[in-house]
Length: 142
Image 1 (cartoon, one colour):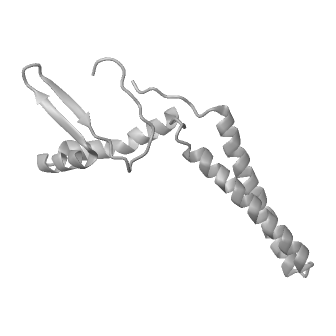
Image 2 (image 1 turned 45 degrees about the horizontal axis):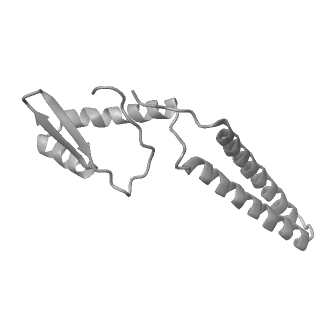
Image 3 (image 1 turned 90 degrees about the vertical axis):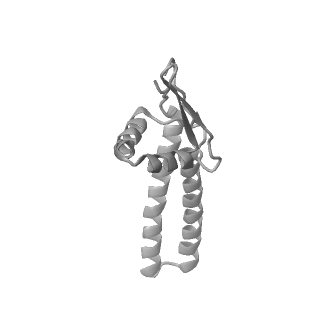
């Protein structure tokens, strides 16, 4: 069983707040540019555009931080979507040539060792540091 936890409510609120700010800034920028094109005072319109662009950039940074936070856990829906997407890969691997499977496992850092005396497979993985993500565990016997 994979341990899951929904994204904390505060993080959802921060993400939504950032998205709303970005949308609001986009609307304002459109209006300010239209006003500038219509003959508004360039100094005033430009200063508002610059401030709004700064506000939008700050909101984009907040959104990026909220959506890439290393403490963030995947939701049940995200895990289900990932498993569904992997379904095709699992089917392809099941039907693949043994040498191709071995190469995929090698590149993933996965080592499987069959122990015939007890009819089990020991799985070891060496995690490549370039792949970042949330670590999840399997509980109980496997």
